[in-house]
Image 1 (cartoon, rainbow, N blue to C red):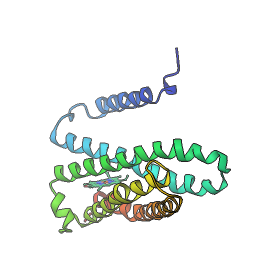
Image 2: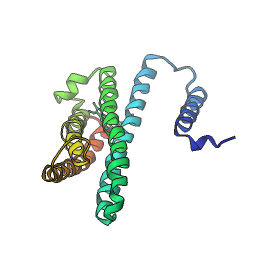
Image 3: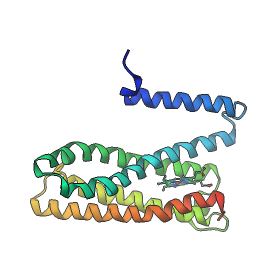
Length: 193
Ligand code: HEM
């Protein structure tokens, strides 16, 4: 029999089964209660956030600094295979993070209050605005520019070069914003608003 860890889907399914086991052992009486659903969407939110910001850090800590060290004949492996795949998960993880984050805020009863910086939820409001700016950058700046830079849509050499630079600078902007964003995201529960 093949090792299940050789298959990503099976690995993820086993992870979910282990989470269900933890849940049944630790909180059997709470499942499907109101607070449990609040927790559930917060959990999905953090999982999606890790996928999104994990890929953002991969681009900035690993891929971008490594590109100049890769010989030209090997660059297509990144440009044609790895980057498009990473960008697929990157942008959809950003969308899922926003969706589950908005559901979490709604379930907590403060979506509008937080976004308008009202007392008690200012901290999460700041985190949400920073993350919304970052998600906007992903979908409306980084992705269209990367499509040109990677040759997924028609573009001349000059526009490819300019697009690659724009995508890199906005990716850097998001890396910078991720630090105060995560501070605010986590501080709401631990320090307050
Ligand atoms: C527009 C996007 C986002 C929205 C609307 C949003 C919304 C929220 C809300 C409402 C909470 C609950 C805060 C509380 O009551 O303590 C939360 C918590 C959290 N979010 Fe976000 N968030 C967004 C983006 C992100 C991103 C990109 C990450 C990156 C990993 C992230 C990570 C977290 C973490 C770690 C928590 C704390 C969970 C906990 O302590 O239980 N969020 N977010």
